[in-house]
Length: 315
Ligand SMILES: NC(=O)C1=CN([C@@H]2O[C@H](COP(=O)(O)OP(=O)(O)OC[C@H]3O[C@@H](n4cnc5c(N)ncnc54)[C@H](OP(=O)(O)O)[C@@H]3O)[C@@H](O)[C@H]2O)C=CC1
Ligand SMILES: Cc1cn([C@H]2C[C@H](O)[C@@H](COP(=O)(O)OP(=O)(O)O[C@H]3O[C@@H](C)C(=O)[C@@H](O)[C@H]3O)O2)c(=O)[nH]c1=O
Image 1 (tube, protein in one colour):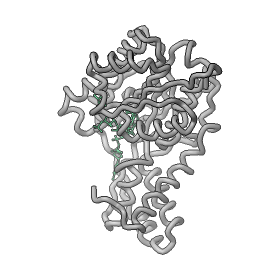
Image 2: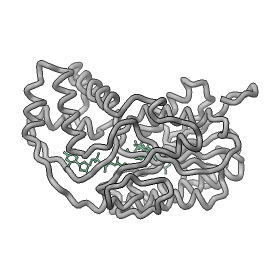
Image 3: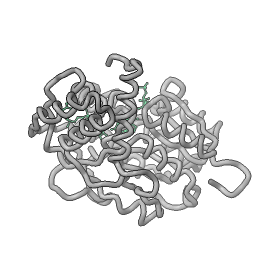
Image 4: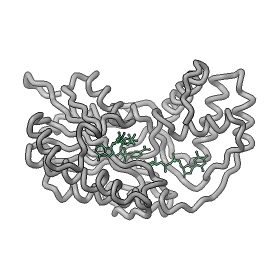
């Protein structure tokens, strides 16, 4: 938080989204002056609309949580993809540069092609293989060329809102379906809330108002895991949390079939090295949020609680 009288003001775009809503909530709770804008209030690819909004609000920080995130549909919707993930970030960056705001932009592990076993460093070249990853990589590049002060934060495998991976695994188990799960995709599950906390840490960082620009990786503490390993963990948590249904969840875990899938849209190696955020800004991922296992367990409990209350919407 700044030391002068005015609270740091933050424009949050994509505020109806899963990360946007979590970030706006955390930022408000931390005392920032938050201007949250949904897509219908502010289309980030609308240069004129963004210019008017930024010019009127004069935010210290723009947190861009708006994006096209449907990985499966991305190849068949190139225009919507380009607008949200390439043009939008470029428009926001141009306005950040013009009105001297810091842009905090979220990107993804899918900007890497996913070969090899080593964790990707921030400095590794972007080599996206799929349409969504390509669009996010182009968005990063447009920001880097804009002259704005930016922090690009690459994250991956988010859960804790909407029809996420945790929900889909639990729902399959509860429906008695035989789960078929990919073994050859490795990453680090990270909760929306952990990224929302990071947003607050970044907006309150002493270097937010000056300082340089950088790309950072963020994920929760704990070793990377395969999709198969993550799904097994989800089901074991579910069995512990609801002992009366332990048979269902442990049975689903036992019967789960591991498969090797080659999907150009979804890289195999999503491991992100996490050192730079601490080295450059002194922000330690493990100090900011619990390990991924704790937050996955919380996501499982939230979903099972919703089931128990009968408040689960049909997908
Ligand atoms: N989900 C994940 O696992 C991961 C996400 N990320 C990144 O995190 C960020 C947030 O993702 P997440 O919250 O999961 O995504 P969501 O899909 O939940 O939210 C994205 C939001 O952006 C809005 N939006 C889309 N296009 C525009 C536009 N042109 N102008 C303004 N708003 C727009 C959407 O509006 P509407 O509701 O109307 O569609 C939606 O509210 C994204 O940058 C994403 O790439 C990175 C790694 C993993
Ligand atoms: C539910 C399920 C998933 N899977 C595997 C396939 C695939 O590799 C992965 C798909 O899960 P999702 O659909 O949640 O994954 P996906 O939509 O690819 O998630 C991605 O979203 C975008 C926005 C990102 O930026 C990435 O970091 C990543 O989180 O899990 C199975 O094999 N079986 C299953 O039953």
